[in-house]
Figure (spheres, rainbow, N blue to C red):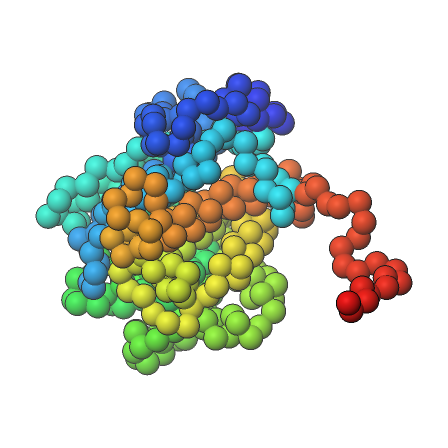
Length: 369
């Protein structure tokens, strides 16, 4: 990670000045510089964005191969500059980190397993030099994401916080393929790098997987908070528990966010929508607080299952849609919380009104006319 610098030190005038309209230029993530994976160390990169446009391991509605493109398109609305001061948290990740886009991992259409191995290699290459943030693609990519990241850093024990509508712990996924998007957690567990006690799932609901799988999860020491429980509990309590479990005796933590954790009213652009999900404020708050409590130097993140063909206001991924815009926001929130953690801060410096919030003193109500 870089020493203490300002955004202008890292990016030059591009940090605060941009005259290019959002519909022109190369649509990298946030129109950040594009750097080849092998050159990240040379360029002193802190965080590297990678697309993993694989959807041949999905089992219901395809289309997440276009997720990275849609999230990148959505990231240009509003347009750059790179400066992204969050008015709620009072932090700008680009004042702390040099972030670049490294393009996409190589996908071999028709060869799902080879594509996953290519993703693993790409993530490993990034992880030797920078913190990886991966844009999917279906959720099967998380197994190669985590495996490549762990092997590149010699992590022997990792924690996993998983925000999703589904447990994804099936022995053979949904339709008998052991590397599909419903089996990746089990594949990570089978690697021997994650103990059940270091895994927490937030947001499951609906009807899959069945009781036998949840029985196996319970026996393995895994823990979960259903979507309804999230709505009825203190979010800080859930976050604290998930972080404690993920960091207990581990070398690093991966956070994986499937957009179908959200209620489809807020994130319709996904392959397996299920009513009764999280609302954006819940999700954004938990992501902020989780990442803030983790070590940014031993961390990785992916956001998956954005399928723009089903998204509201996205017919071509030229400027993204509601769901891809939400995924873009999550990535920026993750980087913002990483910046706070890097600085050892609980909160940034948001600008507040002169007067305290809320009604102050004896204020006479207006008379009725």
